[in-house]
Length: 188
Image (cartoon, rainbow, N blue to C red):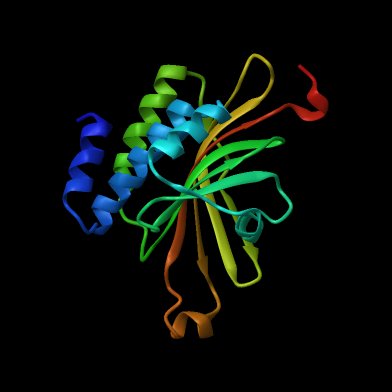
């Protein structure tokens, strides 16, 4: 089934269950981050066609700190699309969920992209704690002829502090990322 058809079906159903939401976020990721990105102008134009609200510099800073970036909130307010500017040129779709379910639909889209491009290899799994937030990332990457590195990965983060979890902070922030990192010192 084409992702655009899937997106239309999900939109027609109204409220989104976890599986429908994952399908919708995957469709947005495919359309914006795998098809339009790394063309920043194409990403911006696509977000305008989605009637997404561009985040203010202050809102962007909350998530990105000092990293140069732009962000858009989807019209339903349930997810954001991010365009990180070099040196970590990346496009991501982020949303909150109660749990991480079967990522099969994401794998289907990512596998198709990676197969069409070729050369992707698994990345080392990343696990890190930042205060009471645990960050976990898995994905694949390839080295481009320019020596830049192209990566597709899934990041999940959740609160590990037992007191915060006891009062209901049990959700997960999930993001799908497509990143192109230039070689160190601009070498080619």
